[in-house]
Amino acid sequence: MKILFLLCIAINMPAVRHPLHVSVTEISMNEKEKRLEITMRVFIDDLEETMRKRLHQPAFDILKPPAGFTVDDVMRDYLKNHFKLSLDKKNQVVTLLGHETDEDAFVFYLEVDRVKKWKHIDVTNDAMSETFEDQSNLVHVTVHEVVHSLRLTGNAPTGMLTFDVK
Figure (spheres, rainbow, N blue to C red):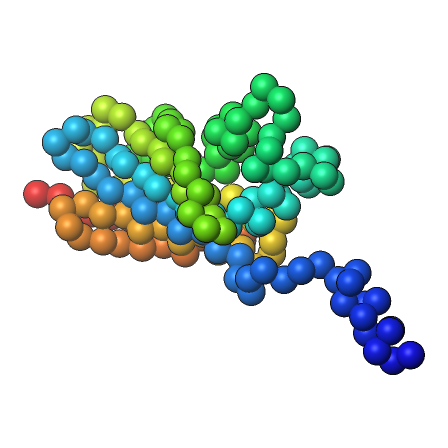
């Protein structure tokens, strides 16, 4: 009887796929092309749960979006609202170029075109923070082989980094 009870509990418990809720974003300044090249890695299951709540569709499958839509279509609007950059206090247009899957994660490719010289970068990333209180969005920015990093959370979704570009 005890085994049957434990089996029923186990069947009804949601699967725990990973213990951390984290995304990692890499931003690199391409001096030659005058653009910021951005990759954002997020767990597929975390993003799917976030989109289910956001869209009020409990059966939403991010790997099989509704007819006529792609993962990029779904994410374009979401990232526009949850991932923002400004350079020296000037808001930048972040363009989603596409994505690929890598095991249990999506890797999104984004860019900011026509970047002029700058000293300060403000990054806002509150992706999935509305779903997971412990969500951390790590951001690494590379300029002239110098890397600075931020840990953004739901309570502190924006951070600023300064580069001494000569």
